[in-house]
Image 1 (cartoon, rainbow, N blue to C red):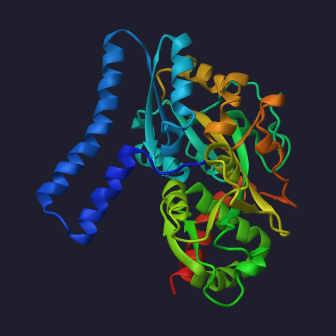
Image 2 (cartoon, rainbow, N blue to C red; image 1 turned 90 degrees about the vertical axis):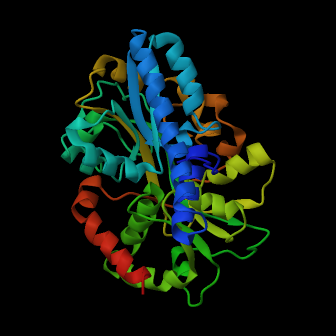
Length: 377
C-alpha cells in the first residue's frame, strides 16, 4: 500500500483515546470528549453525504484504508477529478488497513452502506468472492500491465476474482531499513531467523493488515511446514506488531527500530519527497511476495452504474499517473515517461511469490494461529 505516514487526524484521535483507556491518564469525561470528536469526523462525512442527497446528487460510498484518503494520498485528487465529471459526491469511509475492510464488510453483510470496497488485495479476493457480497465490475482489464494475468484463465487468479475485482496498483513486500542505523542488514529471510534479538524490527498484524498477512504468506510460501520454526526464530527481534501499515511505518521513521516490513517502493517516497537515500529496501534471494490491490463493486449498492464508472476510472491514465507519487506503488497501466525515475530504478525481485487466493481462504485462520503460537511464547 503506499508511503503512509501517520498524519490522519481521525487516526490520531483514535489512538489518543486508546492511550487514555490503557494508561488511565485522564478521566472518563475527557475520554468521552475525545471520543465524541472522533465520532464527529464520521458524522461530518455523513452530513456531507446527506447534503449531496438533499441536493439531488447521487452519493458513492467507498470503504478504503486510511492512507488512501490522507491529504498526500490519491483520494483527494481522485475525488476532485471524478466529481468534476460525474455529477456526484464521493463519500470515503477510511479504516486502518486493507484486511480490516473485509472484516467490516462481513460484519455489515447485506446491510452495508458501501458501494465500493477499495483496498483488498489478491490474498483476500477468493475469501471476498465467497461472501457473495460482490458483483461483476464490468470493467475491461485486458490492457492492464501486471506481473500476473488478469484473465481468470491463468492461475493463481480464478474467473470469479478476475470478473469481480479491478486492480489499481501493485508492489512487492520488502524489509526496509535505515542504512545510517543498520549498515549490515539481513540479506535473506534465513538471516532474519539467525540467533539473537537484533536487529529489532516492526511488523504488522496479519489479522488486520494486508502487509502483515503478506509477510505471513511470504514465510509460509518459502518455508512451508517449517514456517512455525522460522517465526519462533524471528520472534525475539520483533519490537512491536502494529495493527496497520501506517502506524508501523510511522514508528520506523521516528527511529523506534532500524527495520520495518514495507514495500520495495517505499524508499522512492523518501527520495522524491524528503530528498534522502538513507532508506533502502531488501530484495531477498528467496524472492519477495507480490501484492496486487483491488477494488470491487458491492452487490447491494444502489449506485451500480456510477460505481462501475468509478471502477473503470481507476484504470485510466489520469488515475494511474497519480499512483506512484501518492500511493507509492506501481501503476497497473503503462504510463511511459510519467513513471518517476526513482521507480524505474527499483530492481525486480529475484522471484515473484504469490499463493493462490483460494488456498489462502482455506488455510488463513490456521496459518494465523500458527503465527500467534510461535510469536507469543
